[in-house]
Image (cartoon, rainbow over all chains, first blue to last red; front, side, top):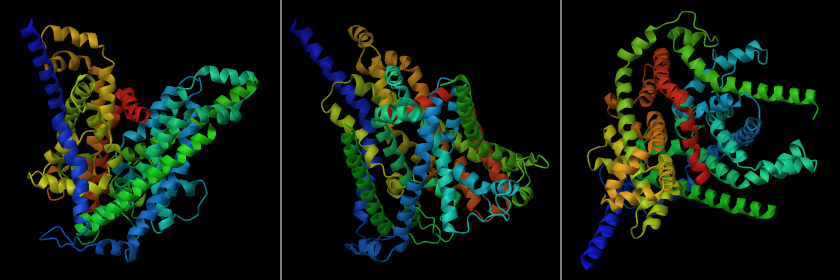
Length: 307
Length: 282
């Protein structure tokens, strides 16, 4: 009897050990690839390391440079915020509208659900490249269409000035993401119990009133996480910009991720400045953290107000 | 609502959806059409959709002279190992987190989930390259594969844990009595039951590996013969011959798009359910 029990205990111990061992390689990889890079950035942010040779501790010099002299960094951060805000103002209502339409009980809507989602499976680089060609300056498709329907007389040079180039980035980004957000909203809408609408129609609520009184409050919690993901995703935009404008004209459409990447690797005629890029990365990481916290606080208050 | 009014309303719904169908497909259609144009036609008369002459040589030239055969091979290589790795990592971790009973399990789980908030996108590219340099994998796609597989994908972990938790416990209890070990139950019983999970994870992993740009780009910067498709396309764009090779770039883009779109048409259910799983549970 005692032997039997001992065997059982040994067995459980062995099972628990195996469970832990199955996770261990991934836990190690996770720490190595998620946290060690942050330590790396913290370590070099206070040095003048340039990728080769030795690094000297320079205290807060990098940060002084970012805050006092690096106008381009702040421009890239501002661009990121403007681009994100602008495109989300279009993308989120558009995705919600399409989701509401797809949630109707009509024939053939699953076809549209599948086809409208398709852009989400295409590489951001390819999207950037194709949109830069669609909006090509003199003989591009879009110029051709606009000329044909008589909206413009002469072809527009879309990538000559910053506002227009930013507009193209925004359009490409909306195209890339509206499908996936639409599906998120659709799933949220489908989780609303049918009876709620039945009650509402007895009470005489229809159309738009129904949308604001029932639909929106019911999807508010999911809305909050969809919007958070969309905001954080937009602030981290990188590939799309590299492929579409690559910061042109004259570095004015650089976003914060591309700007820092170019400092780390010495691209677009810049020097390799690992130390300096690390301090910008640190500032950006803190900025992203602050945005997330403020967002969560602000939306929590909104939800409380509703109740 | 009157019947006529309702019909008009429904027609409007279809009209709006049809408009967005066109908007969704137009850039892709445009890419395929342009990939058959001569370079001169791409550069001078980009505003006509259908090519004057279908230039099939764009594809043979891209495939042979512009090295897109190598890029495709590299993309297949990268995607293959990322997919296999994602299947193993997500089913193993999902199983261990769902059924395992060891100290600190919950803490480790939430610690790994926290990566959603510490993921800094392109900011960590350089440190990742340096980490891989210490084991001399900074100039190969193996570095990318190791980072992608062992770096863990939180969405996959969520889906896998949820799926495996929904498998009835009685099944593994029976195997346990028969003397099957913890890992044995995974290998013989749980893993074979995970087919729908494997399909979802495989498709998500394929999508991200096939479309991945920044990480493979920095790992192949000095070694063009290891570049995957997307990186190769951008490499051609930034090279000195960009203006004279738009037709090749477009053919390359089409080569990269075709498998993705075919797989999407075939398995769109898995794409949609997988890519949205993170939002609902997270």
